[in-house]
Length: 366
Image (cartoon, rainbow, N blue to C red):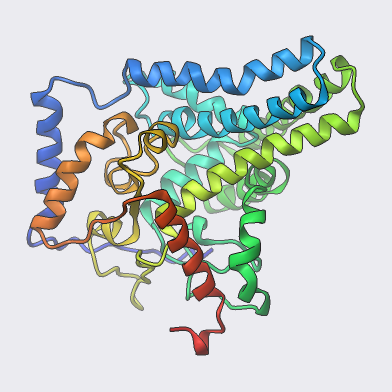
């Protein structure tokens, strides 16, 4: 990752963000509603945790045929992704509740998703939300040598086929959290002194990381092997299926918001300065999709309203459908882009077209 400082322009002569922020604040004030979650989010929390944990406890305590066990692991994967998008995500942005302890508690749900709070908040809240789509600064743009998301990344021959094999790798996202990413991120972030809020200290973070990983493996692998009357390898297969389903859902949802053909992937100039202000930068680098689809709106935790989320990350996703009208209208008034795909299918096609283009040898890329 590039450690050079990036500075966004402070010049917004038309005062886009000031106008937008004033209108959004007025919306909440006039309707007398809080910017955080309400009963709709609380109900969704119960449903998502139930999808994730109920099959787990049923498998531990009762005997089921193999087909039912397989179905339960898939259901757990869906619930796992649902908890991540709807509960953990809002809580770690501080938008789930007005009470800090509630956000901290529910933000900690990432531990049962195989992740780590400190790492996630630095990568997502600090690096991704600040430096969205900036190569060398936004880690969501980094995929090592395996995938090439940006024209600024180094090209390798195998990238020619990435629009075919990428989808198979996407399912490994949460495995990566569990096995390698968290350890490498902790080492890297602590060395750089990065944090979201109070710096945790090296001993505290390493202790937290190791202990929570041991507990995670004990809950999801050791206990099922002990209590379930099935072969150990079947437990591992079920564990893999659960993670793969969750990883595939999470990866695709996040990719459709930024790694598509319409979004910009700008670089700072030689002095580290960006062309646009931070808020306007978000409009050029972020896209919405499937916002009229009630199922996508409900299950994705508002991550299909990525434009609204990136400009107002401290507002709960349950409000995005309403404030989207304000954001879109304001962007149009100021002649700024507001990227959106009407359907999720169109966003998927745009994502894989982008992967295909990035997989072409640079000298022949269009």
